[in-house]
Amino acid sequence: MILTNPTSIDLDIGAIRQQFPILNRIVKNKPLVYFDNAATTQKPQSVIDAISHYYSNYNANIHRGVHSLAEEATAAYEASRIAVQQFIGAAFSEEVIFTTGTTEGINLVAYAWGRANIVAGDEILISGMEHHSNIVPWQILCNEKNAILKVIPVLDNGELSLIDYHNLLGPKTKMVAIVQVSNALGTVNPVKSIIKAAHQVGAVVLIDGAQSAVHLDIDVQDMDCDFFVFSGHKLYGPTGIGILYGKKNILESMPVFQGGGEMIKEVTFERTTYNELPYKYEAGTPNIAGAIALKAALDFLNDLGKDNIRKHEAALLKYATAQLEIIPGLTIIGKAREKVSLVSFIIKGVHPQDIGVLLDNQGIAVRTGHHCTQPLMERFDIAGTVRASFAVYNTLAEIDVLIAGLWKALKMLS
Amino acid sequence: MIMEKDILEIESEFIESFSFLDTWEEKYEYIIELGKKLPALEEKYKTEDKKIKGCQSTVWLVSSYNNGKVFFKADSDAIIVKGLISMLIDVLSGHTPDKIINASLDFIDRIGMHTHLAQTRSNGLRAMVKQMKDYAIAYKVIHI
Image (cartoon, rainbow over all chains, first blue to last red; front, side, top):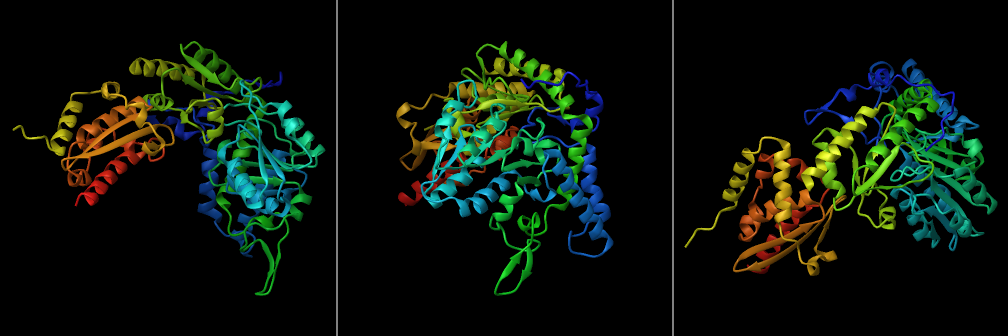
């Protein structure tokens, strides 16, 4: 469990819930209980309004027009970049690149940095708990360059084997790409020490922050990662917008990724000179509405205070874990000492999908399956899990609904 | 000689059975019951080539051809999918390739289970229906 600051306050969850219109939904004649927050969180009214306000009042393409709407849109888009810079503690705003999400961020690094820096025989180190998004781009790169993908094993409790990590690090390690928080297990990895060790052998580090950015305080300078990627939609923001942070000197030395408008300085048919950071990596018209609404999501998080959110989410996790453990035959997969508010479990003799279907019929949304972490499921020798992941708007009463729903599902399946 | 039941007749029987089931609980309990009654596929058939892999559950499908008719056997690791499979086998197995190819399987919709076919990635059921029809097409071509 994440330690919370003793100064954190109790949030008014009822008032927070009122900011989320979707929480009034009735699903299968039951009030929606939404426990699939690790897949995507719901959006507060302020985020929905930011999108609609942009399209209703100042929709224009950015960085180009001299007209008023273009200026307003550009100002809002760039204000969002500053908000992200502050949110992750980046030294420079041009280190913040808007992407479509975590997946694109990783692919951009694997493509642009990877193709310029990886040669045959080099080693790329990932972990056994990576999402497919942080496996496949590196696999493609390794296949192309005859490089070697190495994997840090996962321990039975869902933590990384740091002993193995240190043994796997070596002079050939060029990239360490690690998830900060596991989407399937909830494990919080000690990224700061992982990064320090990687730098000692001269490797570059990418941290997948898809699950961590919403729960943990992110300070990329203190962490000292070279790249940090995350998605807007997992932290109360819209889909289709994400962030790639990269250290300025590394981003500047990297070749371009996609060619197109915006990313150029001068184009002739003979040659093109490229724009400076961050525009160098933002080819084409970006997701302007998404970027602007992302700021509204960050404002929502900052207003509540991550410390206060963590206090509430830790209480949810503690209660859910205790209640689930009472159910006979239930095993929690992932018992790391430090976890975010996510619990993955299996029940002996029952397929996760059957549980998912029967919970859905009671208005309860959980995720079932392999969570895009097939190698991790194989490591635990399971087909998949049921995963309940909690957000700030969830309540203890909703966990009671889940537990009652589970008992009912198990009775029906027995 | 007893006339064999037509695909539509079997579908109608399921629609009628479900019309007596008022709540979602009753419907799913019925499907779970069908799933439990469907004989498990022998282990020798549970091979990679018989596997229809969904995002969540796995379906194994075996077909055979006898006297102009196609026969199916199937299994799944998830019990609700297995119950739905049991109905699909009841409806489609033992008919001519043409009848299988042309079956619209509207009953799935009529009994309120269409979501299981619509979730393309979450289970192998939709892929299984396609595979059953593909087998029928293949047998038709081979035995023309």
